[in-house]
Length: 152
Length: 253
Image (cartoon, rainbow over all chains, first blue to last red; front, side, top):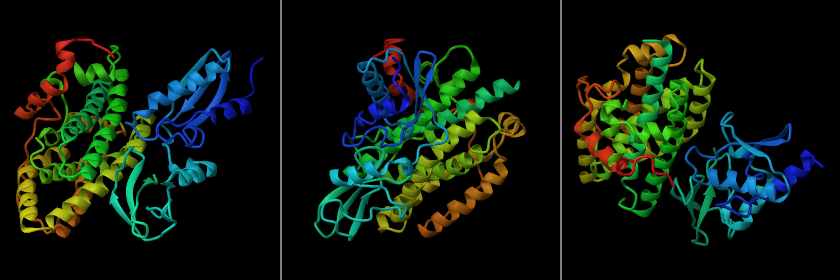
């Protein structure tokens, strides 16, 4: 029996992002489309950043997860337009990021509050962080550094 | 020159610019003055190499001889490269690296903005993707140029020296040749004269805030994007970048 699309989306929502495993690839908004083409499942994935090294790992993780559920023919299609935006992060994903200690993206261009203590006196240390999608900030209330998920 | 061969040449220019600059910037990995800057440089390099994969991937597709992005990056020698002379210039000190970055970013941002409206959807899509990253690059490089230019006596001196050294490489970005004109006529590439006006507005504002003096010269080096005459630096860089494929042709992971 061919699994229906909502079931497949649910499975994909259990595939963790390799760099930030508390959120799924669906939370991240990079799975753009899932469709059956005959007996092949086509999954459209968009990269976060052009050079993000996690992209190929994500494609492999998606294929493996679907294979484990019995889907033998999977085709991963890279789709770059429209370009990925942090607006596609799910609300669930944003909440999980904050719980994990990564401030979620904010249209203001910087974090709203320290993910550890909730402090609002914040200083940017570097526009770039430990992965292409993050910047490095410090909370001047609790003095802890933290990652901020860049808004693009 | 047919449209297809002009398109191939044009895509090589886009991809070789990001490849050569990406490699240059990556040379800082593990050597930058502070950890945060090391990470910032590595991330910038990563974005540029990612963009290279898309541009050279498309170039290979347009060429139609089965060459992949990797083939184009690793199996061509100096005379086949079509990057601007600016991006192959050595890193020098940190200030020189950031000045080179800022001059290129300001050009790159304006170019990609126009390419998002290209008549070729594939080019427009790559440009839209890259533009987001490059906006961020220019934010950082311009802030750093301003901070160091309007910094200490020493940092100011170094930034002015870097600007004087690199300025003769700016003109090439805006001097159209047959490929640029053919691509402009095809509704793909922008009019480089209009682009120069926007670049000047941007760069003038940055340099003024950085308390730096723009050299009073329009002399422009040329020969990079046509491949006619690269500077001696590119060949040395390629011996590093391509050494593995030169020593073990066709090796894969």
